[in-house]
Length: 451
Ligand SMILES: Cc1ncc(COP(=O)(O)O)c(C=O)c1O
Image (cartoon, rainbow, N blue to C red; front, top):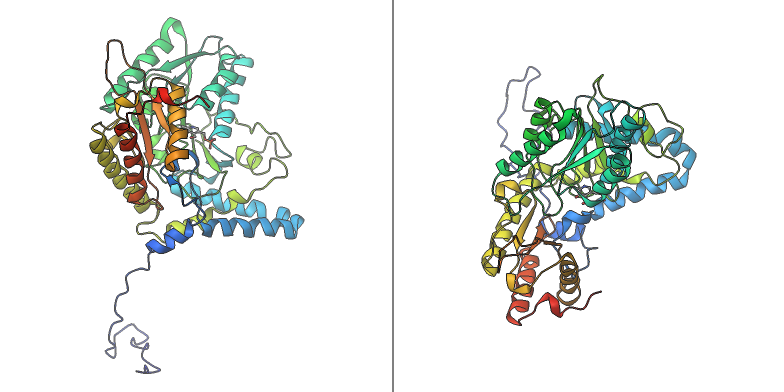
């Protein structure tokens, strides 16, 4: 039926309804479909159950194309790109990030390559505190025992070498409550403050990598404030798109998250938030270029000629995530629910348990592996991981937990599974069946040759 040419003129100029026009049927918003999701990630190796989004993240075809367009813009006319596009584009990405993380000012948000770089920026500044005699030798820096390996190395390179005293917060695993973390953290701060020392910096993970646990950062930052810790840096490499990220609520001085892990950006991009405060010392990018001294955000936006495209696709990522019900919040919520469901399914199938209660995890969860696999060292976890990849087409990281004194037949290996939008239940069934097959064959890690 042809519609009347006037059918949309159903309101008088003052807004009164004049004629009755049948309402358009309410269309539900066109959310991305399962087959569209599959096609966005069709470049993933189909032979691998990729249940390890946590390590390297993932990037859909839509964003890969957006990135390509930025790269071509640069290659087409680099001078135009440099003078007219780059600064504007990075500023736009920073503004989006500022809103996503509830920061006060765009100046508080710098874009850097990754969490590793962000940690170097913060730790380098702390090292200057020692070398410029603002800190006393022996002043303390506190970090979690489960801090990420490369960040621990950075603490060694910048802090220990400068004369700082590094204190590790031991954490039990498996964990049953936040209180266990809070108690250990308080004890470490006490140790840090002993003998009149000052705690100059606390480095706190938001989501530890291995074993993975969501750390109660708000509470720990609050304790740092009460205990007079100078500065708090939250290493939240996994957080954006995975757990709640709110700068005002968390209250740290520095906070970094990658966007290439859970926010669909191509490698590599992270933000480093630095609270605007007269107390905060000036940070600098370790790669010094023309913009040195113009503030970290500006310094970081030009660290020499390189590919800046991952930093420029953030607006496109927003378009992508908004095709999902609830946008990034919806994705995050469903990832959490599904990873918990899959974790419980695996624990039940193997007769084991989760590494922590569901509320202490986000889109990744730890599950005990059957004790009979005989995981007895870090090396065994590497060998088993390789075996699962090569013989079963399963990609999953494994954690070794040394048995405590007197423990026998205890679980010494935990796997970390992730869930992201491209995952299917079959990915987890493939993993379940692989482990069940190994168990039924009487496999033990001792039977694997070292690689
Ligand atoms: C807690 C934590 N910090 C830092 C990093 C380093 O991230 P990137 O390699 O992107 O710098 C990771 C990576 O997994 C991590 O889990």
